[in-house]
Image (cartoon, rainbow, N blue to C red; front, side, top):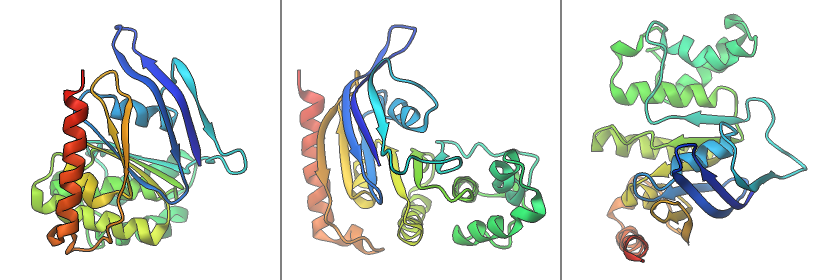
Length: 247
């Protein structure tokens, strides 16, 4: 789907966020970008989304099928919902911006709200929803355009552990059902090990790809109790520690 070659990004302040980043993203991937705060994970996500441009290197989409309009969805750390709008109208927003009327969008909006478990809350405003429910609305808004690629920037970081576990399981089910590609930014080793097929470990700033690890684990609600999951968490922890301690 996407080839990232020798990408670097330095901000006008002089901060070098990324250096010589090379990575390939394949259709159907669930890839986690894992690393400490400030290592350039979110910067790389913004480059993939086209919200920023690299200073060096290239991002090259597969020429046979580059993402079209609406085919890249983005979920931010905060739900970033319109506080005066209902859940349904927040989900309708990207379609509205493309000129699609509410009535014409109603079926798609209802479908994605159903997918994230929010039927019955269509008329609720963000202040009437829990943090987990607000994040579900944000995910539904990203899904309503039927994206091929879903970019997620630490979407569960501010949630309690119980809600985070539930949303992680729901996200895996959505990924299987929809078949899109997901790039998921996190600084949680446990989260990366539970969710991702491929875990990309990034070094401290300037961010570089320190190591890629494949995860063969079958995913289910019981995965966290599986000794293989504990072994994967241990292996990732060791690799991440080595990267953090490297000169």
